[in-house]
Length: 63
Image 1 (cartoon, rainbow, N blue to C red):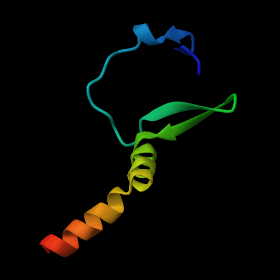
Image 2 (image 1 turned 90 degrees about the horizontal axis):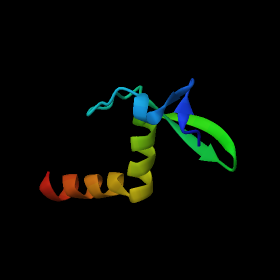
Image 3 (image 1 turned 180 degrees about the vertical axis):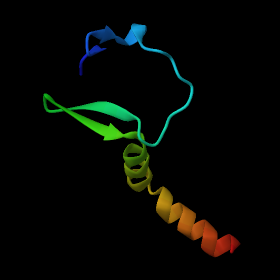
């Protein structure tokens, strides 16, 4: 992954403490650069961690 975006180093970027669903992250996949939105990344993490199944089970138990 690149250490800069449009000639600006990461250290020069404006810091933020919040994320928007449309914020994008760079992903390096076998030497190719891709981007993913924060919203899509969270959904992929939920699926890969099985959180949906856990939530469904808790809903059945709790009601």
